[in-house]
Length: 107
Image (tube, rainbow, N blue to C red; front, top):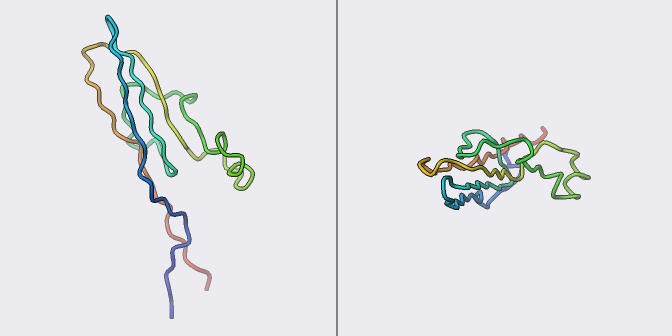
């Protein structure tokens, strides 16, 4: 019998996404934040363009992850801040929540 069994990660928590705005006299200070176990920049939209320094990877927040996987590229969080015109519409679309493809068991 040939069984296809999931052998990947299980991520049951939805991405945490927030946008905060503080109106000042001539501008609005905006902070966008998105955190997830399977986070990518695909379709990420925020009034603030994220800089490389706005991105946190798992190896920066988990010693276990860094020591076990050696992966220094997996996104954990994107948090960007900027000032925009008070007339700028504020909207944010979450960064993509991706799932790893299932692996086939050895035969």
